[in-house]
Image (cartoon, rainbow, N blue to C red; front, side, top):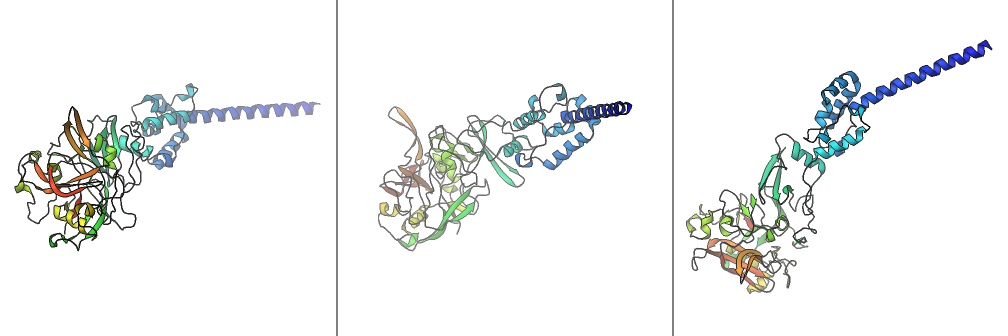
Length: 436
């Protein structure tokens, strides 16, 4: 009987001791967990995960040092993880006094560190981790900075060029059409509908990257053996419209800032410029000449080096499409004699509302319309002729008319003028040709 009692007593003491050890262990775990937030996953964050995890491990291993950090209001690891000004983003070391788990604190930290203005439906963001790096990395552009609609900012980070455009609700990352991250456009607030590729499906195109902003352009080789001898030329030309700019301006404004390359977008919607449509430029802007050249004679500033080319706003090693080169392209397929017949060989099958072209040369002209900004009766017409025609200017003035006129052309659904006069102050499409 005494043996049984002794045995029971020993078992009770052992059980009590085990429970006490278990409680102590639980308290120890709870203490460490109140300081160490849940580790982040590398695939979800753009920060250095190795540094983060080692920092968390140091906190967990030394609970006494962690408690000292907690008394100061934050641990070393929480400082690294929560650099946002938001108090919600900080991982509080006194969370043992609150009935909140650490995972919710981590979620708040993630939300705070990614506090970038949400994109409009027409602008694509590559990833939340990229936005965090863009907005909070030291020495990198702040997308929350104030701006004026149409402003453009270009920076280079780790060898990568990034461009930002100021929209109505703040800065947004600009992603060219040729980028791997496509831009959704169908739900734009301005009613924009995306345009499928206007390139000829059965032709081989080259590709040129404009190093100024990283935009890629399809190119096509023209080798004309037809028509007048003066237009029997061979050259490489953009198969899509230029979209290079420092600043986008509204159609009701003039491109009069001589320190920046300014660009119009149809209906003042950047989606048109980002897509195949490209930008619209006044003559002086296209020529990279002072704004006053839109209303005065500037013949002495054209082709200053006398090589027969004028670079304008085209990339280095390229020049503005000339009247001779446009005519050469229209003859290149050997099909047709009249301007209408020849224009069908250089315009795309798509975008023209009435009659599309055959695009036999691969030039792929599309009906971009143009910037007009004139009164039609009692109505101001800023942009016109989208899906009806395309307009282009040449690097030459049309002195026979007046100083405000240049040489240009237009291609419509059922008509064409490959060489005519045009108003310098209009805004039209631009193509570039490789120097030869």
